[in-house]
Image (cartoon, rainbow, N blue to C red; front, top):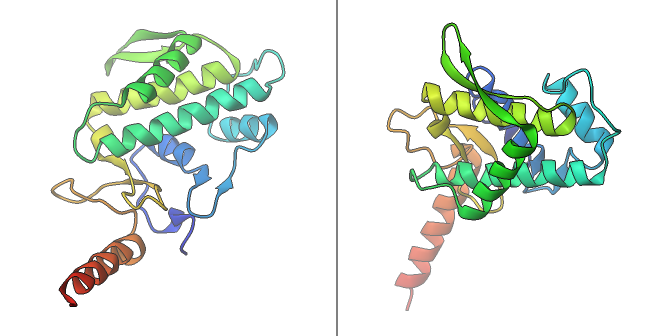
Length: 193
């Protein structure tokens, strides 16, 4: 399966899998996007158990645009996880705006200490719930292993289970082999007079 590497990558642990699936609502390679309308967004958020009972006003194009912006900011953040780089400023601004709209607050839990939770309802609250999952993953140490494929034409989110945390591709069989073939062809072209 070339596009939509979903069958090739390992699921993330627990609810972090929801974040991985959200980023993968866009298959960069094929251009297939599951979030094409406000209705599709609400359906996805509902199926992911992120949407509270009260969605407020009917979600509109602005809600969809904010959700897509959050998705792409998360993709940039997952790319930064490869080298432990800081979150890019533009992505940070989008994620902080979404957290503000969601009215994320820290809640003390009996077992896990302080955890972020959204106070808003509707799409903003659902996006806040998604960001709360990111916060939980940062707290439990699993966040740094969630990455996107370094192949620019792929960028599929995957959970890096490699011992050294050095995984680069969602699938060694597809994207890894493509990268190695490109490098081999480049070296061969350089050595040919």
